[in-house]
Length: 213
Image (cartoon, rainbow, N blue to C red; front, side):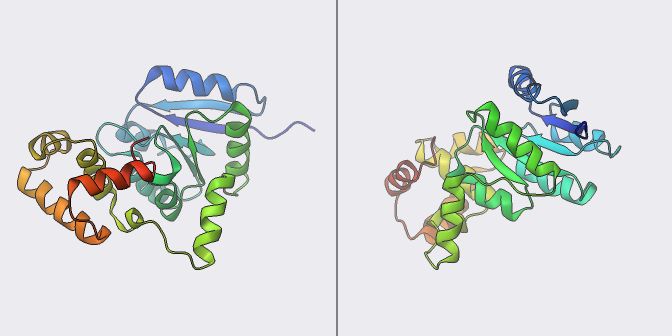
């Protein structure tokens, strides 16, 4: 009996990345990429027609980022399974993606077999969780405290990473389209939430927890 076709939407602003993912998925005869989008706006336009089973979404998109798009897709097409496929390590965004309703989180260096397995699981209505992320979730259920950065909002995470890289307030404001005063407010809030006292401590925390990967 022939497997039912799994129709995939790719959302990534890099043509090379989309080509690579499409090639990887072509190894599975029942998985077919039937739509591609470079921006969140393009993706939301495409899903008006509920012709997709799984969306593979990058986080670093122009305009709305992948997590913001995830929230919109969950409203627009609740039955659409959304997998986040990102260059960012699990430590930064995986838990918050799952909390927002993602069907799973993969990094772009995932092997073909892992990507195909994740798409198949998502299409069946299940969630793909890597062994390392499963261990982290089990630790949290077991009562171990979450990492300090889990308390931060998505925007605060962006500011944290830029501060840890040594970017100045004005540069961060330009990158995120914020005023330097607003960036300063974010910095103060981040330090308070994480119980840290300086940019140097932020940088050390970011390195130790893989936030700059």
